[in-house]
Image 1 (tube, rainbow, N blue to C red):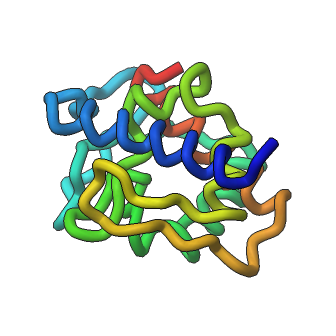
Image 2 (cartoon, helix red, strand yellow):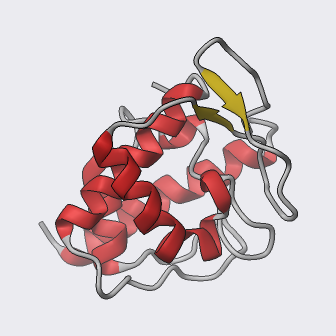
Length: 148
């Protein structure tokens, strides 16, 4: 598949996410028997309910996410005003953004489309296994927020 086409497709998916957020589609905080609500973080774009427990792979992914991704995507992937979009949104559900889209975004970067954060650069130093663990973390947090 043409690399430009793939990057364009990822950019279009992110643009759809921007539209979703601007139309009030963000996640609101809820609590359940198996979850805890994250405290409001300065600059967070959405409230996030954290899973009470993470799988071993997601725990590794959380550490990698916090080291590499949270600078822009915020704590608990809640987004960071002026830096990067939240990943805990329905638009990023697996049926719309496959796990491969995370791999491609890290590998190739993402060209800005509707988000006002600028282009996401590729992220050097992350292996496919690292991104798989990060994706597992994001997916488990999404599930705790009703995103399946």
